[in-house]
Amino acid sequence: MNSFLILVLVYSIIGTVIAIYSRSARSQEEYFIAGRNVSGVISALTYAATTYSAFMMVGLVGLTYLSGVGSAGFELMYLIGTLFLLSYYSPKIWKIGKEHGIISPAEFLKLRYGEITARLAALISLIALIPYTSAQLIGVALILEKAGIDFVIGIVISAVLVALWAYIGGLRSVAWTDAIQGFIMIISAVLAVLFVTSMTDFSQVYKLNGLLTVPNEFWSYKKFLALVTPWFFFALTNPQVFQRLFIPKSERDLKKMVVYFGTFGLIYTVLVTLLGLELRLLTEIGRFPTVLDRDKVTPTLLAMMPTWISFLVALSILAAAITTANSIILTLSSMVSRDIVKEKGILAGRLSVLILTIAVAVFASKRISYIVELSVLSSTILLCQLPLIIGYFHWNRGGRLTGVSTLIIGFVTILVLKCLKIAPFGIPASVFTLIVVFLVYILTSIIE
Image 1 (cartoon, rainbow, N blue to C red):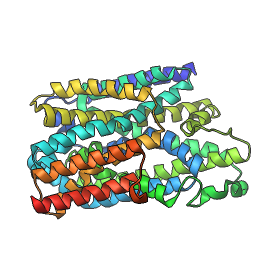
Image 2 (cartoon, helix red, strand yellow; image 1 turned 60 degrees about the vertical axis):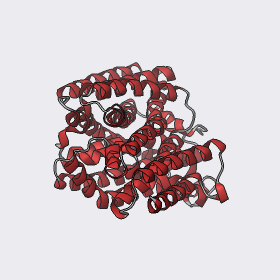
Image 3 (tube, helix red, strand yellow; image 1 turned 60 degrees about the horizontal axis):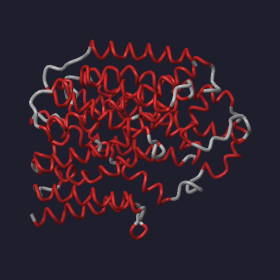
Image 4 (cartoon, helix red, strand yellow; image 1 turned 45 degrees about the vertical axis):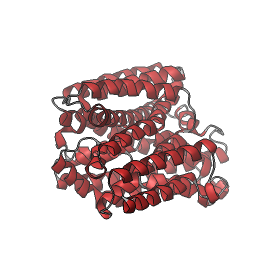
């Protein structure tokens, strides 16, 4: 596997050269959102690469291997929700961002709910996105482990790349590296599926038993709802993708972004979930080992592939993880710079890139949970922002008190439910939190 390490080194050098060549750090608008001047194609690819992370080729392949077609439904609900929300809200958000010079996602909330709400939203995002970002580093480290690199060293390597590319040139560098890596992701997924399909005997598909139906041993209707709820609203609640709505240079490019992203997302989701199902079938017919740790299904597959396909798939996972992680880190640094520190330059933003990456790396090194669960946890915490965003367009009441109350009560609610591992009245924590934050938002806005 020494050849793979050489490939990673070459990949790192090329990515760094691209980051340096495309850097833009003359102002906050240039550094954080590429001067609002990104084409529709590049916008779509950076949105896709930011969204589809190590969660897919490591987390979702493993989840599908374990639990069957319910995983496909889970991820397709994300895609349906995202396209629905982007189709309606993205033109409005893009226009407001341009008119008001918004750079940080929290600044959008400031327009209606005030500065304190924006700062709270920034702080909550900083906390909430540490699990999701750490999931990316874990995905890379699990792959590098197969190359003989210690797990913690793998975390350090991925963290260095995340910080370096974001620090060098900001969003324009990240967007261009995202675009190139997006192509690597889709091509490698196709090759992986073709390879596994060549080994599969579909006449034995009946051996999958309950994995082709929902509910099954893993997917109850309640669990499906619990995981889908935060995923469905991902496009509005997660600041790293919300900020992507500011970058297209025109409404026409914004529409192209939505269409091209939807196409990419559908193809990638089908490929990844098909791969997981095929690998489970191979296990059932004795052609693939039984893997108990679902996050190690893909790393196990890599060891069975022809070297060149294995290298490309491994590189695609590295690419997917890095693109998501540095996008999140860059967005969080913009919130530190714009909403917390209130600087006019980019020094604090750049320093926060380094500090946040170190924090994420430390968290990732503990490997507290599976990649899917870490990813969904972040989106569940961020649900407290949803009423404020939707209310901005559909409810003309509410100000500072409404914003602050909704964020604090929603944040505390989900933390208590998750820490105590309880489901009030049998309602999943994510759904219960969603109900609570909308009730608080409506009631407080009426009183205020």
